[in-house]
Image (cartoon, rainbow, N blue to C red; front, side, top):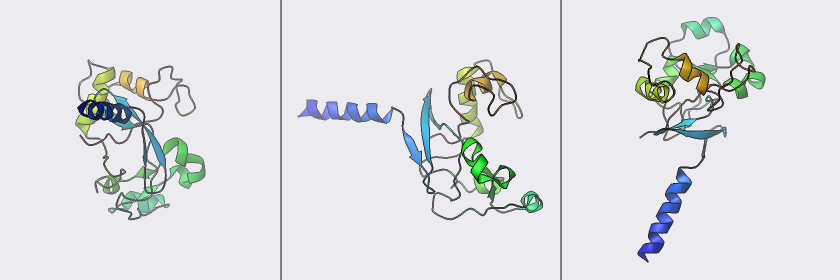
Length: 167
């Protein structure tokens, strides 16, 4: 009996470490990727709801967006049909700062978590406020020039990761 339980536990752990998906409350499905000790989403969030089911206010007016001091989201050029899938939604700081933006069990990465990711691809990188490593950036963005001004030949993941799993 102990052998059977051990085999079942190993199969479960192996399954967990394979590619998984995460679904937000809008039904958007995100692929995940393991990078070192971290797990990241493979694309930007596009949810319009917090993980408790509350809707995030949509703001379409740029003057209102710039002066707003409460949570909001928008789409590039106010065009979700064209820009939702390649770029995700844009969220203001007040939305991110609620701690409820990512699907349950996930969170927006801290500076330290970003730095851990960057060090994986650029071990010489030092933490900096504006730019930490263009070398790591080249590895993390998609190949080609569909969404970048300069053609990118490296590829580790598609899109930018948003939320590592809570440890």
